[in-house]
Image 1: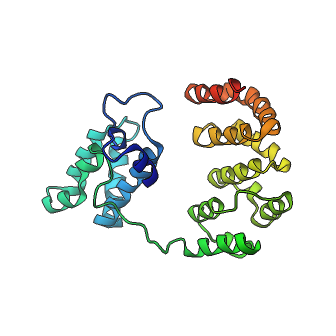
Image 2: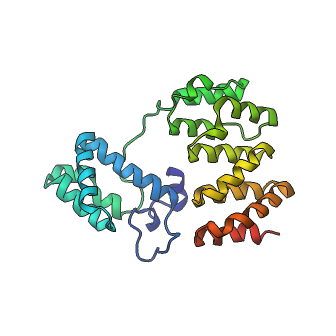
Image 3: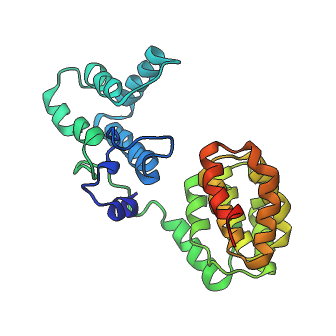
Length: 257
């Protein structure tokens, strides 16, 4: 999120949670804002008012607005009515209008614990230095911790190293698409043939562009080995993708020279 905000510029209207009318369309918005700043907005509220109070507000929101469309104005009005409840000090502390309508990152943004990933980072360093695998602790890690470990792996791995990694951590059998995506991206970037059938299955059943596009980009970057696979797989999976995803992938895969 911080990287995307920096690249876009803190005064860029697209860094606001509520996009202006000049920024529209199904592909509008920055991923680091839509997903991460949006999540941080609610995390900041939760940490400010406490988990119990935040949960009570969230439950009533879903109860009162089930199966209804939602707008930024509706969210803001509901927060003021059912969470702030006239408490001007709390309203100023939460900075709701600034979060929703202003660009950049408000000053009250919740800060993550810098030591939260200490164990994971140590495990990643140990693996990079000596190949030691965290198989003893992998099972108790959260998805975020597993993703952190995968993101810190050396980008170049041998077939033997990838096989050992998969065998020790059960990456090909994981039911979590976030972790599986990172595993497949690493495997394909190293032309690991055993991962190809799983990648093909994944690309046929998962349509989110955040997963699909990077995997095709990885394949297209792996010379003729990857390009041939990308074109073959895309010919099968293209009809099942959203029009916006197809448009981006057509340029990447079909128009590639």
